[in-house]
Structures are given as C-alpha cells and as structure tokens.
Image (cartoon, rainbow, N blue to C red; front, side, top):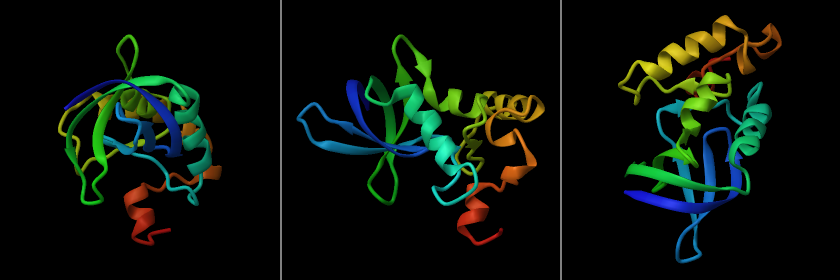
Length: 140
C-alpha cells in the first residue's frame, strides 16, 4: 500500500512515528527493516531526535506492505523527492538493521560503514551499543 504526502504529526522513538491519514485520523507507523534504541536505552533519545530532524512536521510517502501484531503499518518512509528515511537512519547510526526482518544487503553495508566511521550510536563507548532486541529481553 502506497500512501503519499502524509503529514508527520509525531515521533514516538527512532523507528516509530505518527502520521495524519487522508481522512485526518492518526496512524502509527513502524519503520521497516530497522530497529532503533528504546527510549530508555542509551542513545534512545538521540535516535528519536535524529528521526525528528529528518521528518518531523514534514510530508512523507509511505510504502507499507504489511502490519505488525500491534496493527501498526510497517513502512519504508520516503521524504520527497525519494530519500529513503529508513536507510538514512541506519547510514547515520540512528538504528540497527533489524536482521530478523531485513532480507537485503544494502542496509547491512550501511550499518557497517556507520560503525567504521563511528557515526551516531557507534560514536563512543558511552553508549555501549546493545541491539534493541537484546535490550528488550533484558540483556544489558
């Protein structure tokens, strides 16, 4: 499902947003193929801010092939003209590639480059980069 030019009305965290639908109802959207630090996890607030800086208050296009168990749309988000925001979050060190769901190789290469160049959450040992899926299971 392709949804075009929807206004971003909220940033929940580094991988979840709210947009205003065409019929003026809020929709919760989870960014496909990435997993950002949880809000209470190191770098969580900075990841949220990074996503806000990219798309907060802007109109975006959503490519949403599915929904998750929480009924959130799972989407690749594009900022006009065709900037892949999910890709940008990984490339800038704002999120991990969510290996359980990502089947390609491009995002993995970008994640490795972000690590190599110490971008975002990879910048300092202060953040002790723990994958969010491990953090949620209590592996800290």
